[in-house]
Image 1 (tube, helix red, strand yellow):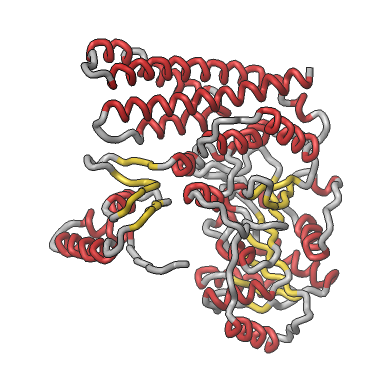
Image 2 (cartoon, helix red, strand yellow):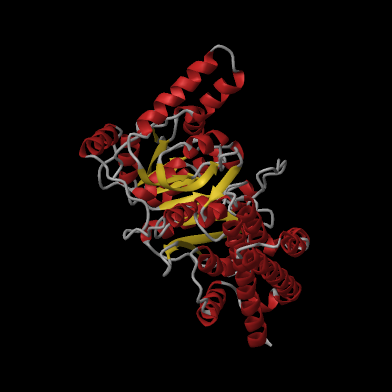
Length: 507
């Protein structure tokens, strides 16, 4: 339950500070008053999930027993505290191998698994009555099949064309007798106007005409929401309405797809999907590959609760279905059997190994992991998929072996340093001699990550861990450094074991 809420305009404050001038003292007083109010309570745990420098400064000044996330030390250096939040910062540069939804990363960082999976939002009776009244005025009864369309997105390249939504509405009207409501923010009004101008059937256009409570009630009334990757998609899952998410450009369903059981996402089956955040694509043909026919077939499957049938119409797209797996985290199952892609293979592996490493579990069960991953591959992908990735696996296995050796070497050196630091009279020259090889080991580890993409998530997290070491106690620093090398060694060992087991079984 939320007990206290403080609102701090980070962007506005940063601008005021950077501008300086006579308001600088006033800004300081504002921060002082805010912190005084916040620190009336001492907190058991404070978590900062944001990346901004201002939030790091603010978080470091909060009176708390434990601190996780982005903050700063006494000398002003940035720190990322907690393994799962270091991983969270690792998602963007390693996103094609990331198996975790952002909601699950928040849960892992909090350290508490909820009993009720998914998002949950209660809708007030007052908001529900407002929706019923608006819909009745537009000739829509409680029994009518009502489909919601979210035409907008945070970026234009993430929007399926309005003309495609229009053609879909016409087909669904003719074949299913569906009625439609358009939702969205004030800034998306022009999209709604374009839809109304092009469509034969006239929707109920409520873009910019609802508050959040009314929007939630409206989505709950809908039988289905078809949406780009944007906020109402998540509100819809929270009120229990099925979603079909259209994922284009930089939008990645594994990160921000509908968080709940039984939702669909569709994406273009092309090597460049999803785009990198720095990519300026001049040919957004992924929008053309996802067609009205695809969305109509998916809508029928969602409405009637049945599977889609694999056929040539799906050749250039892929559809995934969301569910919560045995580990309590969200997973997406591909509904169209294709040959597994190399990045999907590593994503399945990382789903297991990251949880062992970041949760600090020591008893990695290779048999359990092998049966789970291979079972998914055989069930979800076309026959021969494992053979398809064997050649690149051989080179990657050698890289994992090398990473294991380097991390073991680093661990051995740091263990010697740790023992010496803890002695009554540490030999500084001995410590320096042992340390001489450590920077070279770290350089080689970083080089492997850059030359072998599947290993990059591991080496980058190791780097974040090294950068996050803090304090002046040499014994503590040495021990924490040992832990980083040990985690990297264990992680590389898990991958080596799995790949060797897989290759032996398929020989």
